[in-house]
Length: 116
Image (cartoon, rainbow, N blue to C red; front, side, top):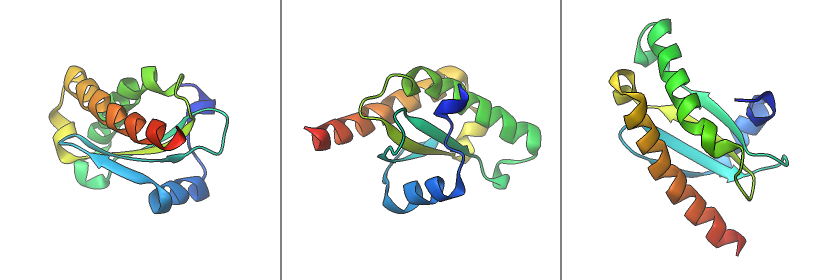
């Protein structure tokens, strides 16, 4: 994922946590708020409860790859925070991608309805 698509500032992540809308399923929780940048940005959080560092890194890689194809072309631009859940630890890329697709469809339906 390109650097411009990363949500990195603590203040921006806090804004998404406070003002964003939330959707979730078995693998992740997704919060999204209207973007303040011209592109969609994503932050990924995987809590320490998911296990040791390699397990958390794998979970982050799965989420990053599953979101990669969605982030570049979203209109309107969104700021998003994806938080991994425990089931993510043993999930396949296909399962995570399907879960992300499901949440992104719900998210986009909500924000496109609000923009119309």
